[in-house]
Length: 267
Image 1: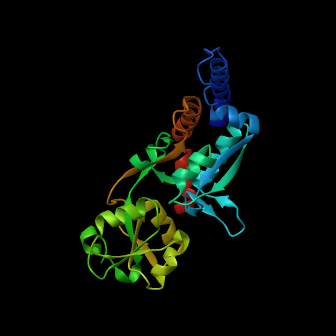
Image 2: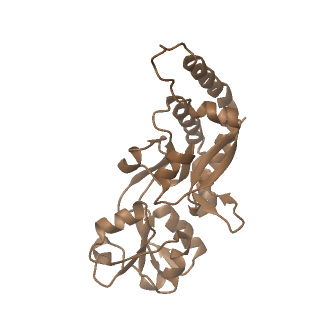
Image 3: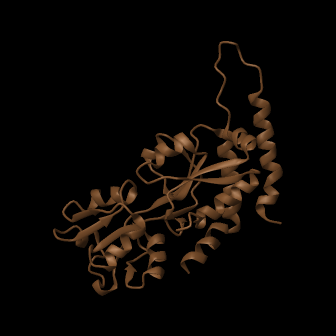
């Protein structure tokens, strides 16, 4: 029996308990509390999931509009546990936080837990930990293996806008030539074509791209420049919904499900 099946009774208890609590009488002068996303999802049968679709192996939108990736699979399985179907809401790294607050119940896709994002949302328990590492052409060897080597006049550092990649680049490479490229999916072609020298991104993405772009390499992926937890954005202050998601994620982590999915993408 899959962990998600064993969790159904527990999740139903949490949901029923919340419904009973939320139905308690309140003083007339007290404003009605906002309903939990648990109730909204249960009533609609839809789990609205924000995702960028440009960050494999976590999230990738194909030419046909279909989404795949580690977090796409996990979010689909979570929706099943909630007796719902996922609705993918396209977003960008620049608009992720705003889109989540306005349109979504959950946000997934290799999202780093940052203080800025915590101003508008909660985070799930960490699903993994990753860090920034350089992606370069194989012909360049290890020329750009350190921050000092990258942070030099004339070194062309390409970066996608709005997320932690851009934030890291601006903080660590002030002397380099920063190229902000609007499409994360075509950054690797820019490297291959010699239009940029290095792209610093999460090591897992670099490993995946090393498979799909054989002329490129990810440098020291086991020893990244920094470290940050990857998690899901959750509704701020929604204890019932957050508890259900985190309880389910704990079961997935205990059985190694995220690692198994990741291995199918980068092994």
